[in-house]
Length: 273
Image (cartoon, rainbow, N blue to C red; front, side, top):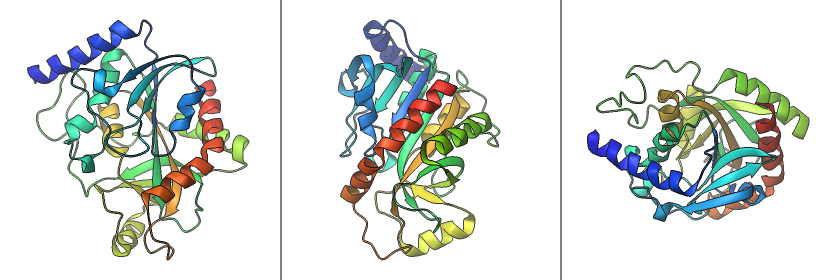
């Protein structure tokens, strides 16, 4: 534990030497959604590879940089590229940045992702507010000795995705797109897309969308008393919902098509919280 804290403190010290005023709000940009970073003004960019002990993104579409600046005049940190269990990182590494954000004083995190649509009412390009999650197919990110510096071991999960933020996001989406989607996000370890049988099972269990990220970060943020809101861009319909073959390139292309609405939603949301 001491070694882990030493590593985090080294990362925090490096970041604080580069950035004077640390924003209280983080936006994690999912696959194909990184263009929002281009709209950040007065920015300081730190490459992950330069931060001591920080993991490095290996997935196409994940640039691998922390961006400190202002979006719509509001101080933000954008995490342009995240880490996944399927890359070979253990969950402690996957969620390492979230712990760093807590030590930097972050209070709110917006988690975004590209996801497969399980709910047949969804269409490619829809934005879904995450109101709950399924994650019992993967080991818990809090497994092992509890990090008492951040939170208690047994945490209530009924308000993991902040309900007040969800209500604000609903209003924002209605203003931007005329409607909104919301639902349960199912976390699978990847890197394979799910089988049609797995998707049928997830539908029975109540999932509306499925992906390979977000849940570990959400749990660690919640454990650290950081407020969490989540948005999925439905970039494809999940296996068996249609006859389409799934590719990462198609995921990125659909995310790019949805980027205008995505950016409007994020910008309007952060002005209301």
